[in-house]
Image (tube, rainbow over all chains, first blue to last red):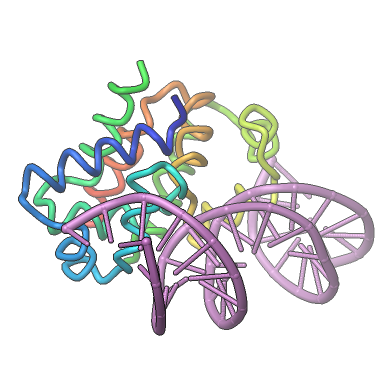
Length: 74
Length: 74
DNA sequence: TTGTAGACTACTGTCGACA
DNA sequence: ATGTCGACAGTAGTCTACA
């Protein structure tokens, strides 16, 4: 499993936990809905700034997203 | 201070802690030396895969780099 | 509500050279 | 050992549209 696939899975879990639709999350962090879709399916490797943007509406620290990603990979 | 500036500062601290030159670190994580220089000066926003690549030779978990970045920003 | 496609812009990351 | 420059290839991220 690749880093971006693991990150996508984490993002999806956190998004669903917060009861966001992809659309709602996209709007909340000022990103495109189709881009959220791409990330969740492991088709994109977001920059650190994007990770920070995603983390905010998910009410989780950015580093937690990476930590969960690492846990999935190991 | 921007996210990328904070990350650059963290990277530099960790690199120096491990007694790497930019060149040595670049070689160890298979990135370009000038790119390490750009990141440390906050001129680039690395992707999550790049963060993972940088973390490995620094012998630190990727999420720790983000955590230290967050601490600098706050 | 989500996946996907295509066309597009902006920027990440490479490389060679020189101070 | 590092900063910087310019040129470049590849990809992050946008937007419209349709299943």
